[in-house]
Image (cartoon, rainbow, N blue to C red):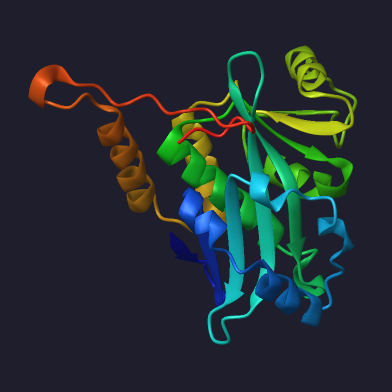
Length: 227
């Protein structure tokens, strides 16, 4: 799925399907980012084959990659959450809206197609993008807190379940509708498009009319990915 970031010439491409993820030309992505001045040593320990959601940011005119976001699906005892494995953009965009827009775009797609995860977590390296996203999502709780000393006990408990060393954005207090409204302005997707995506997910989740068949359960992968 493609989306042009409002007011820019940047195209965001969301990839989730296994075949699409396997078809990413990572050497070309890395070459483009390296040419843009991005140090690639942060990808050294990233399991590219373990990524379950990827956002590629490219320049509309040149087609060159200027950013990439990789997420993997994990689970607690029962519920799914997302881990930001890595987010990288060219230096000129590192302090701008692009990292936050990429994360918001991925979350919108996940919510509309698979349902709302209970949380998004990130390591210290990728904490900035998560903190930026928190500022725009009402009712979500960040642990550890970024700007004050107010600690949500529920978020702290979830953070301990997910693991030490991670920043956790607890999405449990946020309804799907509220979350989509808050994310809409971060990357310019219109309310009509959000409604169509949500309707698509609702249609896919309904039982088939013929024979009373229901949607086939999705198989779990070693990373917690289902599909």
